[in-house]
Image (cartoon, rainbow, N blue to C red):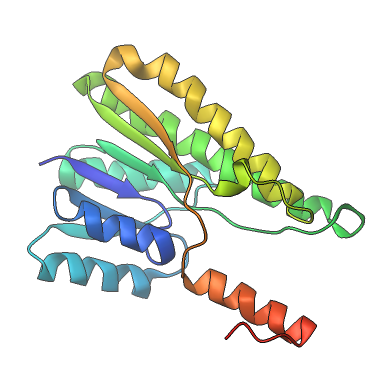
Length: 204
């Protein structure tokens, strides 16, 4: 059975992806800070008859990535399906946007995808089969004021994915970008709560 790694797989959209992949693949739930949540996802997959485990992976740290992939290779042989789902949001209008926030989002959402993809293809190219899936957002197509960071970085990830698809196709590796719309995750609920508190408008 092939193995799938889902970065940011302990909650939200990543959790949903991990649970679905658990029906057909060994699943490794990647987490950076939510190990308990990751273990809960693993438990759900195992209860449904699948095989799963967790791995700590910080996509901004090359040593963390190397350690995670080495552990996966030792347990399962390698990563056949990579889901680049880990990401952060630090948006603001330009006058209030901090350079550190801008750089943090680039490092996580864009450079993180580069680091994990480059490491994953070592096994994929040898086996002549692989799948890389970038989870982005409809903000690639729907530009919204105040979301300049998300609009820009996710657009860059989308172009990055298209370039990889051309480069890696001859090795049996496909690359796809998935653009989910608004999804009822805890992050979105927290955002809605913050909005209602700041405006006095209830989202219920």
